[in-house]
Length: 254
Ligand code: PGA
Image (cartoon, rainbow, N blue to C red; front, side, top):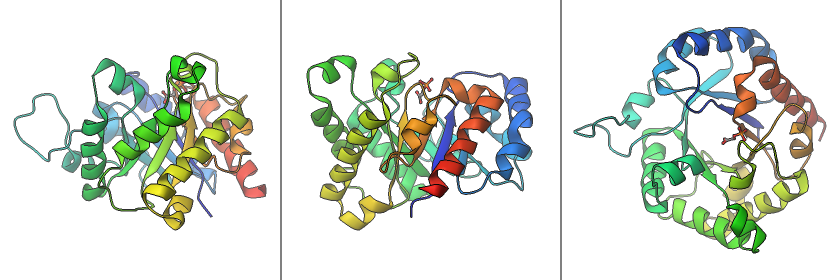
């Protein structure tokens, strides 16, 4: 049985003080919810302070990116060995990194390998554009991103993949639960083809893109959807707590 996972991707939001207040507003309630892995991914500069605030709770931390070298002359970058002190997870290959920072499948693949070697659990993001979607190229695009992102990576259940259709991110136009499940099933098959059936069954696959407390149930009831990567709604304590709470109750009765 895969443990459901809800991760909040705060993106480039919250100053240190705001980050701390947001965590204070939800830490006790989040901690009390069982059967769901709860991961917060704040900006790098808030990780250390938040680690203190969540000490002794069941909440975990993730980073939103990292470089693939341990140290050296890479001005402005953050390395995996810096993150392992603070985080369990790292989001890699988010469509915003691909789009605005020119991250390629090859670069993302290096990061995935390095994260796993370093003991971080990668949340590898894949997703098709509106054009790909409208021209029937979703499967082809997603399969390519999965194969390229995982090239040369040994089978591991530590991997998490988030299916985030670009047209659904920050637009308020989420995919339907059925659409998400169809593509996520394709991702599971791609992982099974690349690795093996058993590992593919153990890897957690998330949906992301305009998830809120009003639509989370639609995704969570689907058999292949193991949780969500939540952007905008993770910046509101009551919203995020409600998403985690619904996930806990719906997955445990499935
Ligand atoms: P959103 O973002 O929930 O604001 O659409 C999701 C994401 O990009 O991870």
